[in-house]
Length: 390
Image 1 (cartoon, one colour):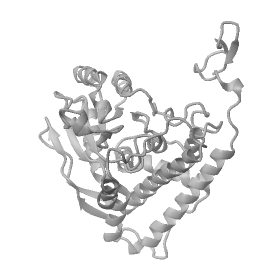
Image 2 (image 1 turned 180 degrees about the vertical axis):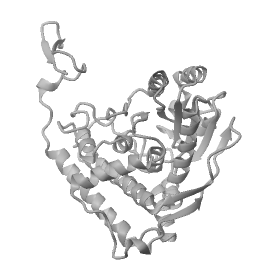
Image 3 (image 1 turned 180 degrees about the horizontal axis):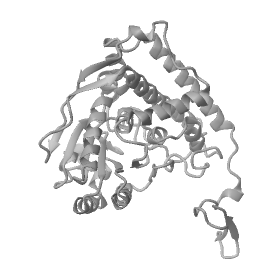
Image 4 (image 1 turned 90 degrees about the vertical axis):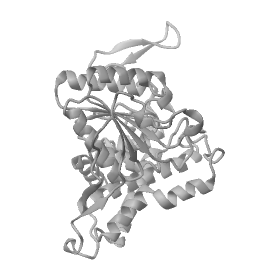
């Protein structure tokens, strides 16, 4: 829900001592809320779908804009640091797909649960991680969100279970979290995200079956960014209707480049789960601007013109910005001020991520167990003993 986004935004402002943005115009000059027509979702085994006329307030719009800009700038800075060899190893960037994360978070609660694959920086932020913690984790520093031990693919915070490196393996884990939600009867749900490449994994179909049998409060979301590594969906899948892959599970195909489409579809899906109807599947049609990972230039299997066309016609941040400006919900100056503050936050975080110390070797085996007495851990041979502290 909006409180998720508000908490992330409020924390960011407090961390950086930033004042709330106000342009030279007064609040009364702006439209407080507006109604927008959004694209209709394709439906599978559903009689009715999400609303196509939706309301967005000025406050919501500004918050969505700030969060998406923060995610975009954070990923661009990660790209820069990787090319400088400050960030090493695997690194998968999320720029272009920001509307997915922000729209999902706007429709669920922070007490709900979320698990995703290795393109996880954005979700770590929307789930409550700070830009400093995320950037420091990317550079392997002690102040990282996983204390410098997880890197790009393994970030965690409360009710967020990563960041998982094995393709598709997070989906059955997410079903397990949904089973816990049902067991405890707390009206919570779990969102499990995976890509179009992982959608062909057998374990995902096994999970669909169990989730449907047990009527788990699970939202399965396929972020279809059109390419699994370097293979287009048309070359990888006999059926690219990923929202129908659940067969007996209802499904929605959503414009994943429009934050309002994603928000309304997720709200619909969450209501479906909380009413006891069992799991639901969503396919978000989105696009990544970078390659699959930093080792992939991203232009050997698609053209630069294709990328530019998507940027020009469907960019999620530009789409939201145009809506707000054309409906007098913000001024150009106000949005520019947000951009300046976001850039400063990212630069400060990058400075921290390059100066914070690396974790000491003594920390290598710590945090294996939670709330457990110290234990000895075998090293590279039976005679080497390392200490693990919770």
